[in-house]
Image (cartoon, rainbow, N blue to C red; front, side, top):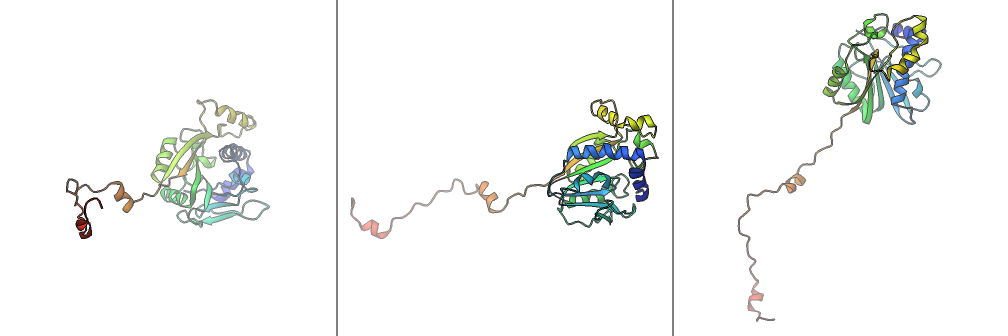
Length: 257
């Protein structure tokens, strides 16, 4: 079940805890994908808090928001790039997107397979997708007061299996959001410290998992005549080859001529 877009907006833009989560996840996204000139970047679910760094240089930025969630205009103060869409039919042509981010779009969907199929369809050759989901072992998935406490949490292996089943090749996976989901002043002020420590301390469990994957594209196989030439038939092996018969003029010609 999708969360309401107003609840998501209020969390990420009007609460300190939401701003902490936004900054921690967005920094990791930018570390994966530094902004580049001329790319088309899209987000599905409620991924717009992560897309602002790409507005300046990208050819196009698109925020896809599913119908059950609702849509809001984004970004504030600029031309709107957010679009209301169906989970199973995104208003993008096949192969249109270079970079795709999904957050609050997969774990809350009642049709996750259809979401992954659309994600695979819109990615172009060499395109990459980043799937951000609640970590089933983390504290954030256990607290209903944040958006990560809703929907189905994942482990890395569970998410990677599902991605492979829908034509993606997982490349790397990391955790983020190591600060606890607390509104206490101490935890909010030390959030950046916990993010730095979490990347070096395997015993700390991040609140979200981020799996980067590429679209599988199979090289076409060449058949037909080329395949037949590489594997010639052997049924005529052993049959004597015909001996050429000299023409009549050659038979009447004296030897040595």
